[in-house]
Image (cartoon, one colour):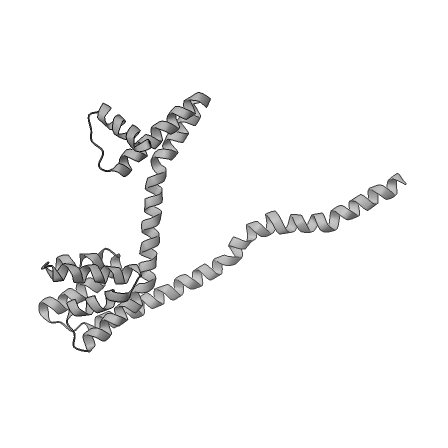
Length: 214
C-alpha cells in the first residue's frame, strides 16, 4: 500500500522513484503525515519526518554493522591470503579459496573479487569489492594488486596489516570493557537502588507509622 501511494506521489510531481524502497519510504511518510493531521500539525510534521528518515537510518546502521563485522574478520582473512600466497598460489586462486567457505563479509568480498577476475575484469576493478570494506580493505587490495601487476612481495605488507588490525581490535575491546561500568550505572541508579530502598527503608517507615498510631 505504501509503495503504491509513494508511486502516485512521485507521478504527481512528474518524477519516477529510483526503486520500490524509495516509493515505500515516500508513501510511508505521506501516510504518517495524513494520520498526524487528524491529531495535530506538529505531530504530523514529526511523524512524516520520522517515517521519511527511519528507513535511511536503518540502512546506515545495517551498513555500519556489516562493516564492523568485516573489520573483525579481516585479520584472519588476511592471514589466510598470506598462507595461500606463500604456498605459491596466485592472487585469484587465493581469493577464491579464502572466499569459498567463509561466511563473514571479508570472505564474501574475496569471493566477489575472485568471481570478477574469473569473468575477465581487471584486477583493480575486481578488487574493488575488497576496497569497499574500508581503509584497511583498501590497503589489503593495494598490496594484492601490486603483487598481480608488478609481482611485488605481498607477505610482509599483509602480515604487518594483519598485526595492526589485531592491535586495533584489542584496543577497541579494552575500550568497550572500560565502558561497562558506565553502562551499568543507569540500571543501578534507576532500578537496583530504588528496589533496595523499597525493601529496606519502606518497611521501617511502615512499622514506625503503625507504632505511632498505636
